[in-house]
Length: 273
View 1 (cartoon, rainbow, N blue to C red):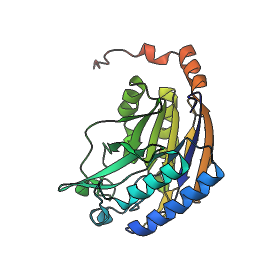
View 2 (cartoon, rainbow, N blue to C red; view 1 turned 180 degrees about the vertical axis):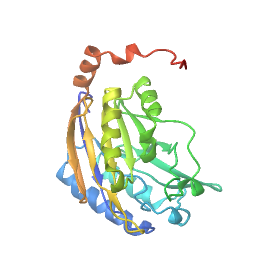
View 3 (spheres, one colour; view 1 turned 90 degrees about the horizontal axis):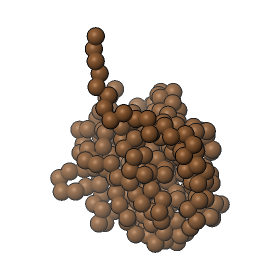
């Protein structure tokens, strides 16, 4: 794969709450349809907790061990068949007596390269993720074919520190995989583009769509954003895929001309007067 030009595909879907089997079938069909349409794709992305839906009480019963997860098996088979790298959204990973909100990264050969565990858990406004999930300890950059992707999940988007750490670590593409509520659309649209702009990085921001158990709705506004904040591709509430070709050399040239990060101070000690 030529590093300069990279083809990205993000797949937005509606999860059936608590039904892992049905969600695997839904995602499999969406992946096949979109990968046959965009058959030159290099990287494909999925949303947060697509195996479960955003339904915290369903988290324990939907947990899978990484060794025998049906969701991972399907993603590995798809990656190998279509020769595509998959950043697999997230699933509930069981390890001993702990559960994690885990994003798996699978290469073109169907091999699990690395995982990222969600660092910040959303347990406010009636949500209880922290009652079930153990937070991850570290940010993770997935280095695939020389392309570095900084991985985050949903609520992580509210913490610019993790994205700045990724940029300093050499990330080319920032990723946020979410199950984001329609109620907070302004936050999603603003924060995702801000993370791209302030770090001069491409950003893949994708979320689920569809109804939730309490009658509220997922936002379903997935986007591929460039390093200046321009939306290259987007989808509103329907299921489907968004596709964009990005140019990393163009991004590097912009960074060389606009050296914002060189002006960061070593310390920002606040003086109160």
